[in-house]
Image 1 (tube, rainbow, N blue to C red):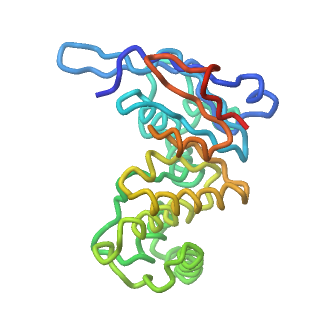
Image 2: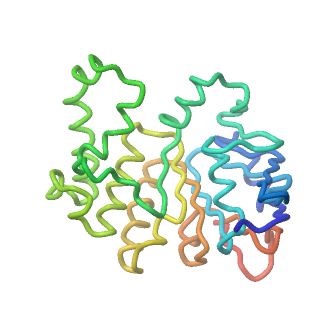
Image 3: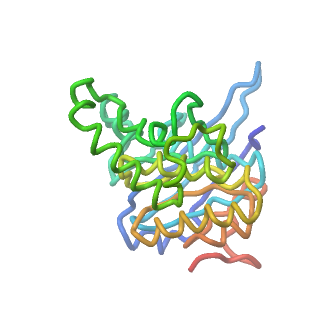
Length: 255
């Protein structure tokens, strides 16, 4: 259950505004209807993410951080306020532009891998590239798609697993495939929702190392987590706690 009355503010607004935001939430409000009751989740949420930055959204389970991530990725729509990408409101985009935004500009990684069991590792990886592609386009580009998928997977240490089905992989290997799939379209921003939450500590650390390597190459990342140690891997942390953002005190993760 999302925690009602969450009031999200930017932890370090001055630092965020020194560079034009790649992705931003502006005074976002979101509530859910549960029977006859309206449950407010986000009230005036504000977040700025600069290009090339890794921001962690830290909060307990049910704090609303996943809701914020879904709004940033246009998987859900806010009741009020706006989400902006490269300083353009998503609401000002056409339906086709928003579809392209979700498919091309944003990459998604979730706690659960959502791999299709009937496809092998390579096919799962290049699947997002097929969205909106005609059969003719696929036939002309399939070799390039397979090559990119294989290169990504090899870079993640899965070159010996290319023809395997998801059921034949470990949890860590499945998440590596999920990350490769999220990167297949060269997104501007990677949104990661508890990407290590289903893994043991060692395997989770390996996944964070992969994300760190992608970040070092310039990838912008927004990651939600309830784990302080995981959040500390980011450049900056926005903490959601009891409906407020901690901007100071004993825990400071801004680098």
